[in-house]
Length: 255
Picture 1 (cartoon, helix red, strand yellow):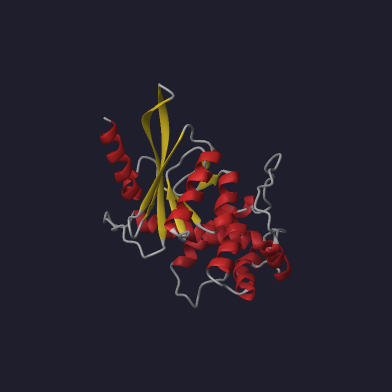
Picture 2: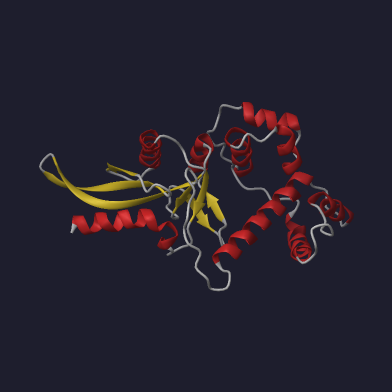
């Protein structure tokens, strides 16, 4: 489902031709067109995860990628060349699986480099339409004569700092999706990516670094709106500091 989301964003948001998507993913044009024609974004749940044919070769492939980084661009092996080398070693899986592994490895390395670096701080500067940030806070209201705890959804544009606030009784998928739908309507569009914490309605499991097992329903929603979800490191509220300020201000007002 993650690859399907990327294909939809490349084509519908960035206007990337099918030929270029074919080159990047190794998928056939017919498969790509099928994904793009599909109006269905609901997730299909699997009974159980099946082991990939690439699993026994993953460590070998990661080692090759670390070596390739130290070479000049012209000397580096392509994903297709590494796939051919793995076939020699006994791998009988598809090229697409290898290409997906390479993309994920490079993306993870790039994110680690940006967040770790040499102990430097990278300012959170955003272009118009680049990103939005989302978070929840709690508040109280008198409803029907009773004090009722509310779950308050904050959605904030990272460039203009424009934001929306909506209150709900729960933090369910329905409430989250409604909050984002109404925010996109009021703010006049959908940015390229959304920055979230690791809330249970979005992340099923936190892996190492930036690796996340994204909730299937949340992924379907992101795929529908064509934004890329990005999740903060645990206990790193500064990574979405703009909306975090909204939440802190709300807590102070509640007190």
